[in-house]
Length: 458
Image (cartoon, rainbow, N blue to C red; front, side, top):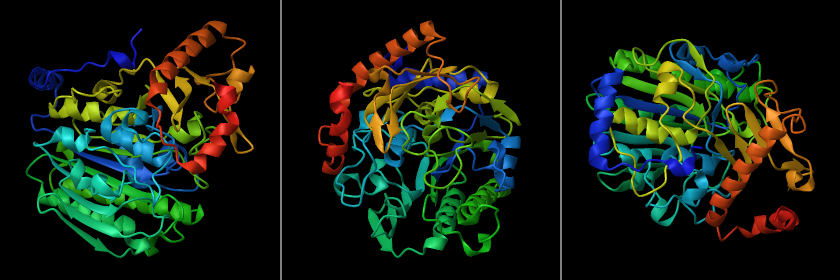
């Protein structure tokens, strides 16, 4: 059975030639595609009208879906911010990067190791690369600023906008300069977009990769004044309306520049909703273990003439798939010295092909707590009164048929013993693989919480 360990580690020269030849055969545009990833912060599966939001109208995002492909089984790389962003940028399960445990706090010295190959690194030197918005992968020592991780330009904030102190930073890899400025909270999303737009205009004649990492709708909400009161969902909905407006501005700018057919645009979220927002009927929320509400987020891809219009695809995919997909489209080699857990989902997006994943491994911090296949989900622990309990080891097995029960309400473990046995085998294999990678220096604030159930789990 194919597993994560089966990842091919291709030689740089042969892969580049094979990828370019394959791209030509598959109809990839002769020019390397521009790539823009719009990454929202804590946007839930049910927060945009494409996915059923009732109180928030998102016409630009809906237009993007009509003109592209909507994935209905896309998972963020983690159910929390820092791990998810590490997984998205590296194509690796976050635990492999050393950032699988919790989010980076203001006084935290952790960060994304420079040995990790980001999407920006992988696309160099052919691509101009820029990150505009929230970083949250380390703001001290060797990890900061993002220009140390392959980005030519950065304009944004080092971590979530609910953390203090907060400042805006502009970094330029060519000059080595980092300029700090004050934050005007209601202007943040507009500033992120305007800097991204300027970067796109400046690099219109060469391939570019842009990550527009909006810090909204993460709490607290700071809607730009023109959007206040424009939704039926309070300040949270107003901020989502602002995000929708930014999507519309981006699509129009690409059209005005004559770049829309040359540019793959992806809209997604780093994880599920926090205290506000909608998971669209999925169980739990951000940080909620293996349940879908924390992982299962919107994903829309658009590139007219390359991505078919108006298609909905249910093949499962994950944030770790972006790096290998972008490398394939750009004719670039995958990093050969590390394990890449993600898979190329070009055929999923273009042709509605089945998922290239046999399974997805779901973590709660650094613990493997779930396995997802195309049809089933095996969950080994759940939160009760604020504490995560290993219910599977206490005799209660959770197996969900996601085709019939996407809200994970009714376990079918007793009715599907063969499926249960297969999922348990997968879980044990994943646990064995990832246990040695656990972070050795857990922040003290979490040690007491962990000790309450560690003896039961092991």
